[in-house]
Structures are given as structure tokens and as C-alpha cells.
Length: 161
Image (cartoon, rainbow, N blue to C red; front, side, top):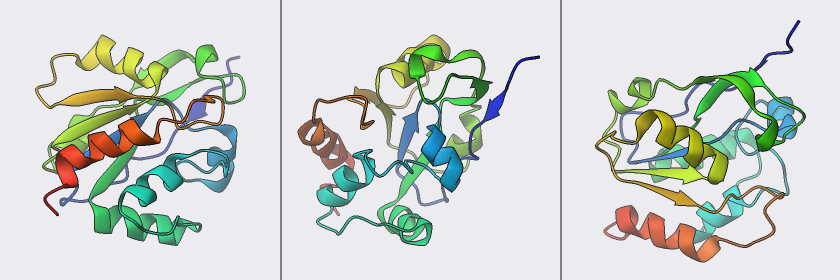
């Protein structure tokens, strides 16, 4: 019998302007029950750094940050079989119904956090009609620092704030 893992519900509100789509929550994220829960993941440091803020550490601080900064989070895969946290092992997956977020918000940009998120997104949503960009994964498995390109992408939406 397959061991199906389940991701998180989308995190957003009606004011969200950017949707960051990862692939699927890591083991550590699933343990803390919130996005980018691995302390080695660079997501929180990168995004809070763009806004000149301290990196949030608790789930409460993270949700407050996301609401204030109008950032929505979800994963392109909502359930799957996966070995540990390895994106390359994702199989038998279900794709997120992005309209759940897009119908309730005014998303101006979709950021695809890493290659696997981009691969699955493009397979199902290539003609979505909202600008999207694939950025280097913030995962600790990716040793390259993509801070500059993340900041550049965020500036496309938030430079007027």
C-alpha cells in the first residue's frame, strides 16, 4: 500500500500579491506543520531580508510577516508519495488547484521555488495568464545562493511599496 503524504493548505488572504509555490513540504516542514520549517532553508532569510526585516522564527511571526508583506504560500503538489524530502522522488502526485488562491486574491506574480516546482507547474499551468518566474530553490539541498535573483523578482511587485 502506498505511503501518501499530504501537504499544507494554501496560506493567503485577499490582499496577497505574490504567490510562492514550492514543490512539496520537507520532512522538517511537515513536522512543524508550516512552510519552510527547515532552519537551513533560506526562504525566510531571503524574503525577510528583501524587506529589511529580521527573519521570523515562530509560526506566528511567519504568518504575521506573510500577511503584512502580502505573500501567499502553497506547494504545487498537494499530496504524493515521496522519499524523505527528495523532490526527485515525488511520484503519484496531485496538483494544487491554484484557482483556490487566484480567485480570492489579486496575485501579480507567481514565484516557483526551484526546478521541481517549475517542472510540475509548467506541465499543468503554462498558460495561466499571470506572470511567473522560476527561481533557484531556497532548499538546503541547493548549495547556490539565489538571494539576488529572489530580491530582483520581489522588487518587480514590491518596489512601489
